[in-house]
Image (cartoon, rainbow over all chains, first blue to last red; front, side, top):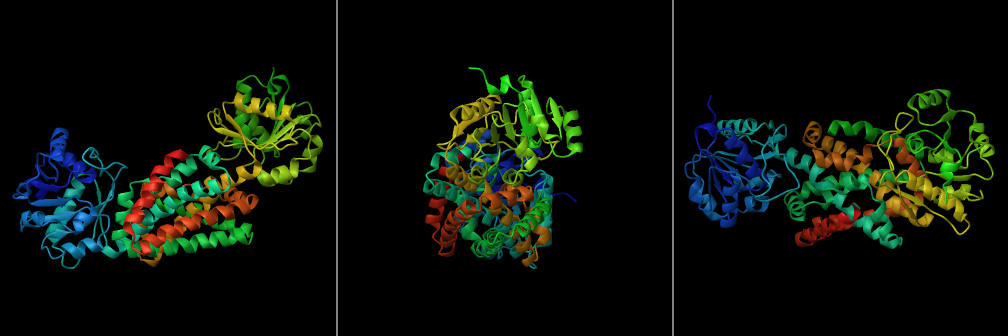
Length: 285
Length: 285
């Protein structure tokens, strides 16, 4: 069986971290990549970086593509410009890379050959300078097919994902969205609150300089994702609001439990709870 | 001015991560180190590793030491064995390495030449195998002197700290304890709750395997200190209980604020809050 991404040009809409990395990897494997970007300056820089075979700001660049990857931010994916919709060839397999799947399906499922998917790869970088080779190697690429999803389209996206070294898996959109809320979107808020608490608590204790001076690698790790891209964190909370709020309820229940043990000085029970956490964590690594 | 740690043998009580590392660094700088440990097997292993010039289970090993570092876990430091108290020479400068300072001072301040201090260095390891050279290099070593603290004793501990490359600073015990609650002890609970929430929330969503499979480096970082040594986490909460509870109040206030923005869909305000966190975090690195 030949692969759609080898037979026909691959379209990529957006050449940020995900789109740019995908372009580099596909070209390295001999694919012809035709990319659509919004701004002329981005197109120029993308050409300089060699992120695609052809880069254009004209949606017509997608016209002979067999497989098109919408590598757009979630908000633009959920409200796609009319010019893009018109330019997508009717017979093309189309997939996305959004980190929330239920709203994407709601918006896109009426397209006959649409496949909702989410490559779980990233760095702290964004934009046309961010793309880099090998980003997807060994990382999960999750698709959330429905009963109505075209099996041949699903298979074409799987071949694309596996071509760039990703680990393919499928699950329901709701399970996906709840899982990423728990392990990614809610933790951003948990981590952000920590930075603010240290700053305000330090000020309240008259120890503003001290908290900054004494913070070490443990604090740096715990606060890292809370100090990440604010647009991205907001977009995740907005597009996955119900699941994030549900994840926060689970989180609060656990934190309440630990705080109650400290409050009531139940030290053996606290040690037991922390030992359970210590045993559990490696399952997530 | 000559340094006490050069002139006279240095005593170290306990050869775990801190005591063992200190022994290695002091010996490398030409000091004579006389160490007291509890168990004969520990003494034998410490001798094999060369953690001190002399290692003994007999408290008499401390008898001619000019400066003694109590590198004991907090609980043993707060309830020291009688044999140790008797063995500490009356004229010796004595310091500790405990990560909570107010209760240490409460227990030890009656000693004429006691200096409460806290070298802020660590790894995930503990025990006689954990000590390693260079652990204190560039790390803060905080002392919390009081009006009654002997200035010459304070200076002797400072010279010791600086000899192993640490950055010396002093502050009040209460400010220290509140600062470490905010940047170290409370975050352990915040981080631990995350692991439990992901596990229980994943199970509730029928996505137990999925949450484990999709968890990536962001989750690993945020959950790292929550998956650490349960005895140590409990000891910190126990010995610094008031400050930890106060830090949790600051933390909850911040998390409540972020959750309210998600609940009420105030997205520009959420983005503003996350941008403030992003700007603030580098001050703690």
